[in-house]
Amino acid sequence: MPNVDEKLTVEVLRKLQQRLLHAEERIGVYEIQLGAFRDHHVEMLRDLRTIYQLLGQHHDRLSGVDAPHRKATLVPEDPR
Image 1 (cartoon, rainbow, N blue to C red):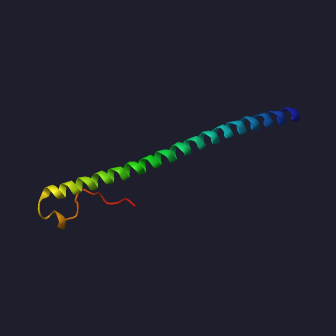
Image 2 (image 1 turned 90 degrees about the horizontal axis):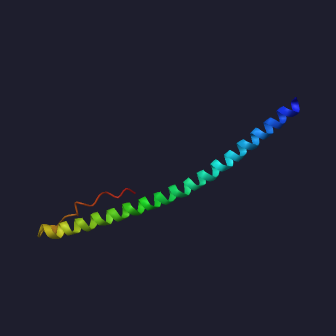
Image 3 (image 1 turned 90 degrees about the vertical axis):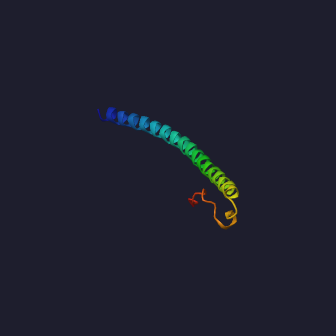
């Protein structure tokens, strides 16, 4: 009987190890995808900041004579 218990324990541990390896592989894939998403998000924020800067410049040009003395009001604060 102890031999059967030992074989069962080894089989259960082997299955658990396989499942753990599979889970680790999937986590690795998710880490890569999350990194790519984060990089894309940062680039989008930079693009939005550039757009707001350009809008602010155009706004200042169209507002009149005092535009060179004012800072662009449409530029959001830099999150960094």
